[in-house]
Length: 190
Ligand SMILES: [Zn+2]
Ligand SMILES: [Zn+2]
Ligand SMILES: [Zn+2]
Image (cartoon, rainbow, N blue to C red; front, side, top):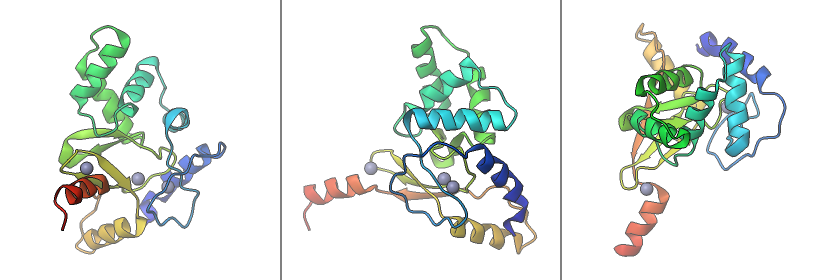
């Protein structure tokens, strides 16, 4: 039943053919493509390719918003991104234009919205579409991003079985990240 999404995936995979990605440890089950989690310059290049492949321009302002967003190590509110872009450009940028660009990024798989944090993350895989799963640490605020297409497909099928037409499952898991679990265990040995 995931067939409705397939054409989009195919188009973006074609756009993402060339450079060798820096693959980090990930907890994913992908059978049909070379899933890559990117960072740094490779991430920026992939984001630009994805936006251009979608028929959008990679303007200086959009590049600046992406750079600010990618500079955060945890989800950033639209306000935080506006502040970071303003600081980088040495002038006040309009919050409205930053909001619009973030929405455009989300619509084109370049950024992701973490609903429970009301905040945004740069998408580490702008080359391929997934119903990403976010692990939200209540202790430090970090968000780990994992992909498991079988889990997402199961949720979509479950919704479809009721006659519901799912647009996007929001899968966020609240808890404590590995680092915070270690700190807590050291502070309070069992
Ligand atoms: Zn992928
Ligand atoms: Zn993902
Ligand atoms: Zn944590």
